[in-house]
Picture 1 (cartoon, rainbow, N blue to C red):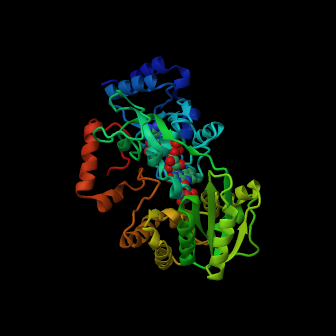
Picture 2: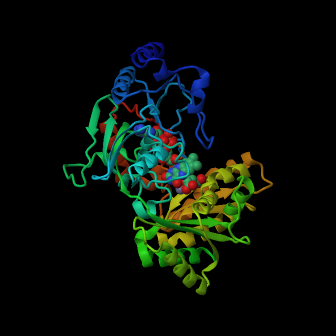
Picture 3: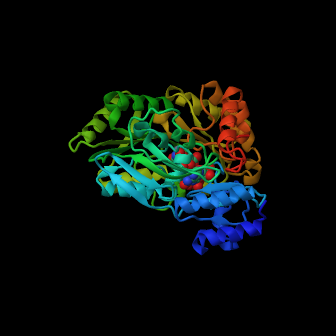
Length: 472
Ligand code: FAD
Ligand code: 2HG
Ligand code: ZN
């Protein structure tokens, strides 16, 4: 078996100086995750400039028995893209595979390489007068390879589905270095097992996504955004139903926010202003959009809010009058993760339940966590329309952050007990990564986990792809 220094020499000859980082300063940004939960080590970061280069590098590493950790924008919420502490795992950054290879407004498809930043993919689609609808707070850093590998959701899932629903075909470098070109742009293709879907949500444990055919949609020609104070969680759900029943296709996003979370955004994020006169305990952000130029969304928004106010569900509402005001309202929502970080230590629970159970999820898990840690501050927020709430807990103001984080598992168990009771999932959109592998046996044990392990063994028999992630 090749030793590390021989492997580095081989990789250097293959990739050249732009394709291989080995000095400490260059490695640094690749070693820790966004949440600072993990800090690993690596002998090098491989940065291939093409699919063929990646395939050749994978062959060298496979021959050397060296484990590989795919990394896109490194925005994983579960430590999925971080190498372990052994110093043996090689990080493979897809950043240089950043070409939009093709856009076809007739087929409504776009072929992007894995390292294309999500925002750049959105912009490229817009330049072709189309929409690539996936949208999330990390879109300025997250990559197409990363969002597909985590099957990311985000703000528009309620209308357009998760990343999986936006993908038609893939190009993949397999763990032995073979290239599978499955970049088909077909709406219908029932030809055996849908292998492409194996790699979506696999979090880099089955191979490298190097390019993808993505679905495009007509761009929005009209939109309307409102920031609403609602009576309680039930009123938030009732408001969602009112919009959905009136015009399901118009609801581009429907996000729940708590008084605590909005308070943190107003306190910590420069330029964040309260769109309403006072403070409330519960809020909803409604975003309506249509590709029809005269869709009458403003009228729809006003009519539904008026009904909901008459029913006592909506207490107050601010309707955006300009694109700038829409952006300002969205900023309060999108800065939630950053604001929570600045407020102190927090524990995240990216959970989902049937949409009808969201109010019960928020209420019961908040109560249970307050009983567990007196003074803890629940900060539930997120994608109500998908039943996906970030049931996060902020430390009590006077508690030592380290002491609070030492209770992370107790807090997660407390929330998850409620989630299980409501028929939900312990990971809705962020994935398993390293953080939640120990929950897999309990939640997915039996034939489901055994099948996953069998697939892993078949595709990656040497176990070199992102070891320690997803599977226990
Ligand atoms: P990375 O973090 O680099 O990697 C994620 C996983 O995919 C890792 O397991 C990695 O090994 C693997 N991977 C990366 N690229 C490849 C590839 N080309 N081939 C194979 N495996 C690969 N997620 C949501 O779903 N919805 C949200 O609303 C959302 N909001 C966020 C907001 C913030 C502020 C942050 C920091 C994160 C957020 N996330 C959200 C989490 C995160 O999952 C997404 O940002 C995104 O899916 C990760 O993309 P990335 O390129 O950063 O991937
Ligand atoms: C979001 O919806 C992300 O903003 C991050 O999924 C959620 O910080 C979180 O818990
Ligand atoms: Zn989210």
